[in-house]
Image (cartoon, rainbow, N blue to C red; front, side, top):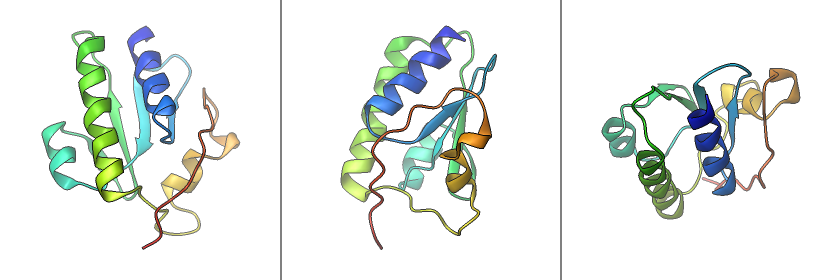
Length: 111
């Protein structure tokens, strides 16, 4: 779970929305705009969010590489905007979700 917290912190430091539930190794984040990145990292996606299950074999170096590519994607394509008023991405930033959440500056790219 320490590695999952590291991933959460790296994603948050990159200015992206994410959430790590208490006592969990699953980090939920806003879906990357590039489907190639989603496929390359085998992200599980639902609508406008994705999640990463941080398994014991995942290293900090691998997380650093993932976040580096995630930031490159954000810089090239922008950020995922919520698909609707009650979308999972909107719920991701809601404090009623529970768990650990650090609120980055949200500035969605307008389409």
